[in-house]
Image (cartoon, rainbow, N blue to C red; front, side, top):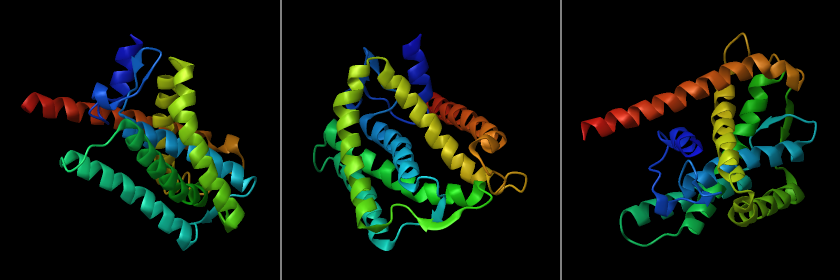
Length: 225
């Protein structure tokens, strides 16, 4: 039953090839190694940024050196994916995980200020990560997260795929929350976390619809083949 649930969550998001996926507690993870990195990288990246920002709510994008690093992360994943699918070279699950994690980490750094800008009544005119120390901590945390995801989380057994399900939902919900925040009833309405619940309900409803819609599209496409 749990196996069917995990596969259903990732069905519309990923090819779910066993040889390109990790396992936890005897269960295949909902998405492949690369996508595992993207979703866990995004969710953990948001958490790290929130800790770095402390009580501030930075709404400005990082400075250009950090944006350049993010660009390198995304380009590395693109290069790994395109060249391996084209048959030019062989990739590995560890490399897929690493490049996916870097991409998710970078996308979180781009989403975090947009999220703050749209949902909070008084976002801060600030950036995160900002300064040499913060950027070093941010990059160091990425390395630590790779170690955690690759060797620590498999020790959780079935908790590993469950944690990934949470990360997938959190990723979609966070991005949806940016768009929900564009709607007048929700735009810059929250002063505290508890004020976010109406917007979060809408964002999570959108997430359910998106996951279901993606699964339907894959099922429909496969029925045509």
